[in-house]
Length: 291
Ligand SMILES: NC(=O)c1ccc[n+]([C@@H]2O[C@H](COP(=O)([O-])OP(=O)(O)OC[C@H]3O[C@@H](n4cnc5c(N)ncnc54)[C@H](OP(=O)(O)O)[C@@H]3O)[C@@H](O)[C@H]2O)c1
Image (cartoon, rainbow, N blue to C red; front, side):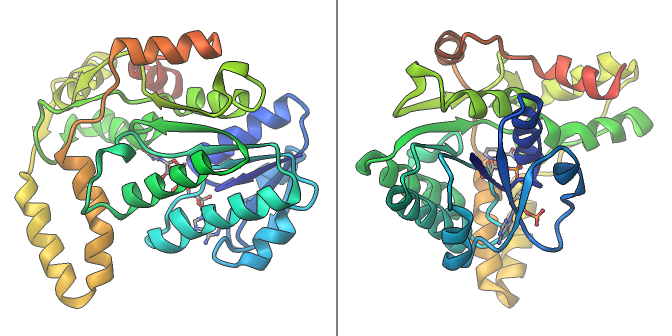
């Protein structure tokens, strides 16, 4: 039995779908108010709980062989990105879990001080390296599905909004491909106790995304490109009333201020180990939105 956390998220949903398509037993860890009907309809066992609660984690782990940790930080990296994963690992070790697939983030090892999610992911990775569980750490670049609403807006208006340097590079990953890698990780020999940076096959500048949309939807782009200092000003303002929110915004700022891309050799390593061809961002958008 698989336990999938973040099962109602953009990645988690895809993981549950894949597992159920293969008729594999899966327990979806969801919150009471989440939209989980689709998962239930597909035959997933629904476990209602909160990852902030250790007892819920212990109960959810009963009879579990594989954990795929795909939950978000919900604006509280300490509790969710770090502590909930630590509990899943420690309690998973005790209850005989065989393999832990951890969705980390590209750049988790770069030591960003001002990015709570990156720091939490790095600490969780260290727990895995030092522990007894079988594991695979996947460190993805930005997910392609994040940009579907931007693509739809572009189709309607031609507007493409991007904060910060348009020359910054990224290797946007097909969220479907990442779900596939997560599922395969528990049985892929070459992925056992390994870390993979994972990104799509193309290194794209942020400005290239507007050009891809222009090609797909056959219209001239209107690029709106606010500078990063604007976000910094907003963040300062937020910090005045809510210091915790200001800290959490550090992750978002880190994502905007830096480059997150994978070299061809990195993509090749993933494709070779998993015997799988990664999809381009353009193909992902075309598949979901047509052209
Ligand atoms: N999106 C990206 O571009 C990106 C890039 C690199 C790495 N990642 C990592 O990939 C993973 C998946 O990202 P995503 O974009 O698919 O996430 P997402 O769509 O934001 O989903 C987050 C999931 O976490 C669940 N969750 C939040 N708080 C919870 C709690 N207290 N108890 C139980 N469940 C809780 C949410 O449940 P509800 O439905 O109840 O809200 C939801 O299912 C995350 O670990 C993220 O850090 C994402």
